[in-house]
Amino acid sequence: MRRAGLVGAVALVVALGVAPSGAYGAGHGARGAAPAGVDYSYACTVTGLPGLVYTVVINVAGHVPATVHSGSTFVATGIMSTTTYPLTVTVLHGSLPVRASGATALTHTELVTKGPVVISGGVPFTSGPIKVRYRVTGAPGSRVVLRPGTVTADLVTYGHATCLLAAGQPAFARATIV
Image (cartoon, rainbow, N blue to C red; front, side, top):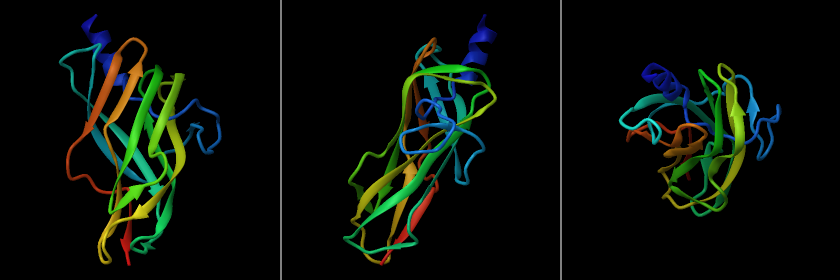
């Protein structure tokens, strides 16, 4: 019984995205090959299996202009995350926020799952893409950088999951402020 719980916990790689639609589009999830981006290794816990901490790798990608002007606005596009679950999981709600430094978000910044969504094991699951409008707050010569934040999800069987990222992770998108 403990082995089954452990296997289930490993399968619980906190789901992100919206109901799979088979095609990318604003507000729709998709299944397919992982996008180019940065692989982030998260340390996750779930209320249904207290004391267990497991690793989840989530690839996050997105695009910003190479340069942005201080005080101006710009749009980050193609922000998405991809991961593959070893077993099928059902997500009730999940969220991966996008954090910015050197800019302030003017629109919604989270990749969100609105479920229930059944995510098939062994099949890459992609959430997004979304686009986010930002106002540049950094000084000329500095950078705007985008990184993922803490992932949370409510799952059937396992309860609430929280996945934390270690400090100092690289950005998945960056722009030089001019």
